[in-house]
Image 1: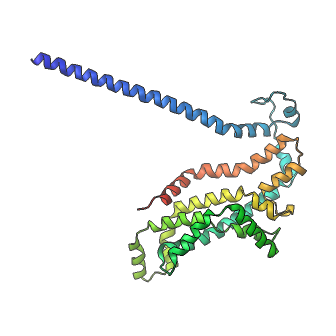
Image 2: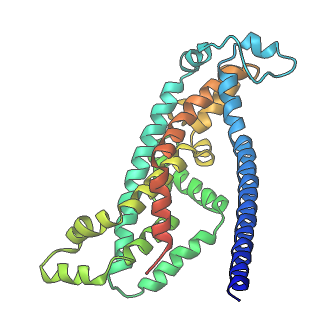
Image 3: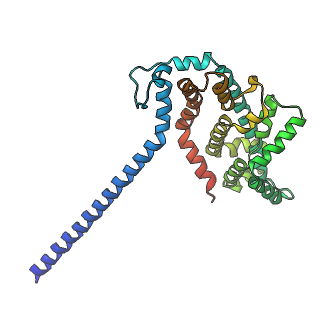
Length: 300
């Protein structure tokens, strides 16, 4: 009997080992397929960037002489980048965009921080109704808002001014909602304790709430910077003076009146210069963006 029991135990152990090995084999096969698909997707996503950089370091003659596009170049050149700053006022476009981005982001942060604090902590009549009204504005198509803003800015004689560029972009219902949800996660006991100590609302906001909500604020700042840097429709609509062009609508001016439609390498060099700040910004703060979004999207 003891021998039979021993044999049964050995069989059970060998069977469990086979099941485990089969599961490991399935998991490893699934992992290989998953990583293979992710690798293919990464190539699809990254190839346009590689092609953009590759084209930007090809000479105009070498690019036009390729009847079949090559995935490499044996004679790279940086002349296209020099042309991007000398043949066209790309530096001025970058300065305009930087000024527009910094001012718009700073004013928007001041607006949404105060508004989010009011909706999250203060009690006033009609608070919920006003916030629901704000949220309903997210349902309005952007095209309708652009038309209204264009009429308003034109009537105020703010076309071809930085004020006309900045003012319609200093509010965001989505960022307000995101920050309000984050503020509401802060325990009420901290607010009541601060009020007992005689702390004002603004002091509590800057000393307690903003430091706690820093990841969300960093996320909102980065997303707003990217939004301003890529803004195209509104700057294109409100400015027809080259002194106020941003990089988004200035690139069209470069294509039409700068390098010419045929000089693709020089165009690609300008696009690389314009895209590089955003790519670097996202790579440096990608963890902060994900952390801020996850904190703002959960409650409790």
